[in-house]
Image 1 (cartoon, rainbow, N blue to C red):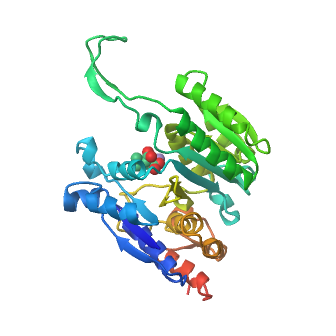
Image 2: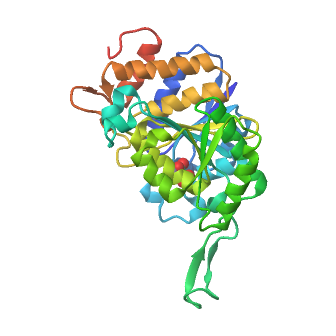
Length: 362
Ligand code: IPM
Ligand code: MN
């Protein structure tokens, strides 16, 4: 088994180092190879996703990814910006199914900005389609308008589109995931306005015929945004398109206390996967050793479960994270009165201690 390690930019290098440390104490046999990606790769090789990094990612059984991006690259032309690295990996590897669980750990119920009773025990799974929609739809660009409200004016445009097979395959992923948990899928769309999402809804309903044991309902995205903060526990699996999923998954993340806790998995048809925290590179706190590594450590657990067929090792990591939280250790983003504030490395060390039977925090 080979794991490609792509730490990226900002806090990416700090948090990935902790996840690698955790993987190493598990006594599994795998090879790792590290490569530059994002702004770091641009600075070294002139491209955010160099051919050598893409090759490594293609050949690996799984990819552990940190985060990319920094304000200092905002002025570069789009094709050279760090974000193109993650978009390119998703596209070239066909990573169409993005799993973003939002789980509120019992120990963190009070770190949520919502009332504890609304989030206690929360366990929802957002399944975001990741290689289609307005993110990748062609044509896109800038031009002089020939019609619209201001003919002759400069304009920019993107294209929202989904094909039947793209919708079918993500719907199957969602129904199959729901079967293993609460047996309920909410498909989020904007069918009242957008042709793309009327089609989305129609196709999801068709696929649902093969899953009579799973309940399906539909929600417009604006309402879904509201319901997520009103009664989040009513959801089980949420399936939606690329852009709505981007937005709703950040919202769902906050319900759990901190986006610093949330892992994600992006899988292709061959179950090859890219695993990354749901958060970004946080350039404002990079290099300070204070970022929360738990989302990345939990992403490594998802990697063991989904791509490397090591479910027991994944369970062990998840239990170790809970033990560390129960011991009261908190990075700044989840800290509250009466708990112990620790840095990135101490948090990683504590997870390692929990896994190796040592006393946590020593
Ligand atoms: C995410 C990020 C990316 C996205 C960016 C960095 C391109 O926000 O993974 O959610 O929009 O998909
Ligand atoms: Mn996002």
